[in-house]
Image (cartoon, rainbow, N blue to C red):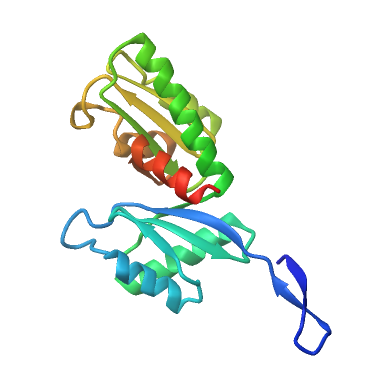
Length: 201
């Protein structure tokens, strides 16, 4: 844990933990009656576990957190324990640093511009992965690109560009997870842009 020195009331110095900002993306909540997780309940569960003033955006499970924890892996496990204890079902979660979020938005914009120059685009999505995929799995997923959709993997962000709508693609989140062998959750590029602008600073 990282600490900073702070002048105490008596004139001495005390050490206080330096917080870092992360953005967590929850998978498959609020999609049906059995996986409901209202954002007010989500924030309350996090506050009960010691997180201070977590913020959420829309109902798909996008959360801004501040914590002195420095390990993304440990923070991910902690959040998943909190969510499972509160809801009674597992909630796979992808945790990104602010830099990773901004990079995902920047990459998404660049890919969208490239694809739009080559043909009509009907959707641009980013799947955030819980863990880093194996190189062979990345190669297999990217090989599924065709005229109806193209996929590019950048670290723990999978960028999917669709020539048709999301409902008709074979490059949906289930296929991405199956090929990569890693849990993930997707957001459209509009949401990723917004979160990067609001929470990436």
